[in-house]
Image 1 (cartoon, one colour):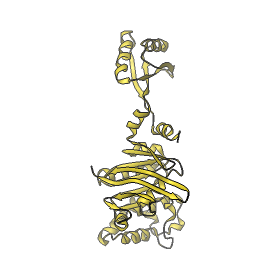
Image 2 (cartoon, helix red, strand yellow; image 1 turned 90 degrees about the vertical axis):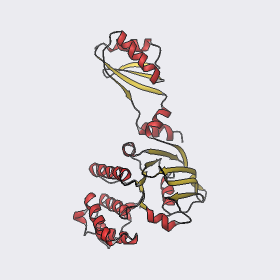
Image 3 (tube, helix red, strand yellow; image 1 turned 180 degrees about the vertical axis):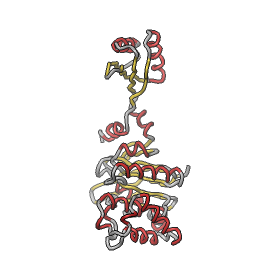
Image 4 (cartoon, rainbow, N blue to C red; image 1 turned 60 degrees about the vertical axis):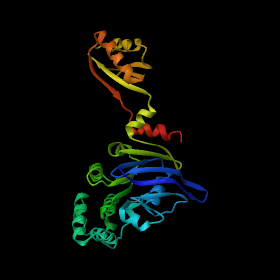
Length: 313
């Protein structure tokens, strides 16, 4: 798979403040990449440099092979951007339809394709009945949907989305996530997603990067990061025997676990090297005539990873 975004030794300073500090990162074509971190971590600054809205102090970014400093016009032609303040970037004297038409023509979308593309985006984002209205009359959520449509009007190869589902209701947020997933898989579009909604990232992103105080702290697939930061893993066992203390005693007596307890009609235990030790624990239960109804891992979610990675930074 080819790299769609290449960030190398990127630094951005604003007088005495270093907003982005020596960040290097590659994003592959067709990947949905989540960029996570607290406020003022450097997420939006990185996106603005990649979208040619800011110049780096040091380092480079290339998008689809185009350098943001050497070929900014080419970068803009292959990228779409939903900025952090996207809900306030429309022309109020134009209708919703005319806004999309205007931006489509700026991107040289052929007339025979432009009208159809506008209609499809308005329908998908449930804006068709407001097509002739000025964005000045829109709620924040409607403005956000129009901004999302604008970022996609020219069918860009790379889309930078800064908080794309903010102000959207849960149903529309789900539709947007499904749309991004489909465009990445079928259309091979690349999405670079900044968000605070960790459940959204967990559901959508192939990989994530954590940035704090301008420094890229960790990059990886969510499941790989969970494994990295949790060498001690937690499992729960539901047994047919109503006296769960027996099961807890059996598990503890193996000497293989860090801790074992009874919790909500299950025996919960923590173990290192689970792949080798769990079969022995299960065997000990079965040899003691304990019938196992269910056995599963309590998997930490991305919020747990976020707190562990960012908490100390």
